[in-house]
Image (cartoon, rainbow, N blue to C red; front, side, top):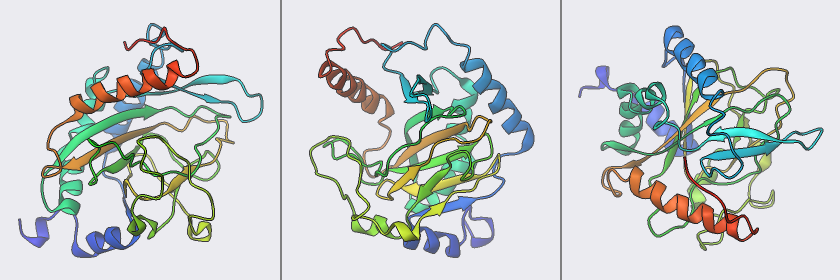
Length: 259
């Protein structure tokens, strides 16, 4: 591939290596976003799936009332051919592959709805130190709705990915403290519908509550490099389901299922 047809130029690749994130504007067109919006609305009607015992579902409290509400399907592409098409879109795969210098493989997928009032997520890295977890892990955000500071857009911390894993290597999820990260360098990922953001699994990030009166729906897609395990999405989710059920059992929630 010559440089004129490359999905990313050298400046973009250098910027990603330095900052640990990259934003690409307008990768998806208006008709594609309209289709994703309609699909998100259809999925939200899947009341047969939205159950507190279904480990596919994620929940988030309301920032003001504390009410626990549905927030996310993880995974999602087995529910939606539209989301799967985006997850395997050559434009996204080519961009991530350009960062790797080799083919990218889909590893994980989820659709976060973030309704008005929903809390955000504390500062963390997406990399978790399971033996099977790829060190080449990157996340791609596909903006279905606009994301900004008002509705709880993702905030990343440039350059911190170069420190590698900042959490205990015990295979558990950990939030980071502000003394581990230079929070003054935070960048809120302002995204328009159709934009994508790519960030390293080692890039610390967080999100604030959705203080707006609009939903902030984002499709989160994660990839690994071909040389770092190849295609192993199914393997990951088999392991992930077991891990989640073990975590729920610690709180005496033993009737969980996956549907």
